[in-house]
Image (cartoon, rainbow, N blue to C red; front, top):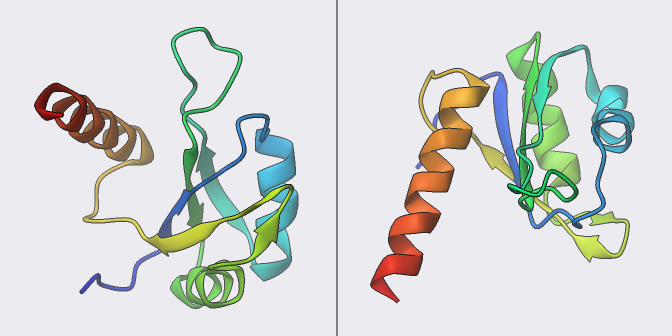
Length: 106
C-alpha cells in the first residue's frame, strides 16, 4: 500500500506525450511543482511514464483519484502514488533499473 504524498507516478503514456500536454491534463487539479517525462535514448519518444508533483498533497490526491484509468490521447493512463520521498529524477532512475532487470531476466 502506497502512502499519500505530493508525488504521482503516471504510466501507460502514449509515446508522443509532451510535458505541455501532460501539464495541461494535471493543472486543473492544482499547482504543479515539478513534472518529468523520461525520454528514450533516441530522445524522440518518452518511456511511457512520468512523474508529476503538486504543491499540495490534497491536490495530488484529487488528481490521482480523477485521472487514474482516464482516457488520455489514444490510451488509458494509470496514476498512482510515487514510492518514497525521492526526487523525480531519482524515481526515474529507479524505474529504468527495474525495467532493465526485468529485461535481463526475461
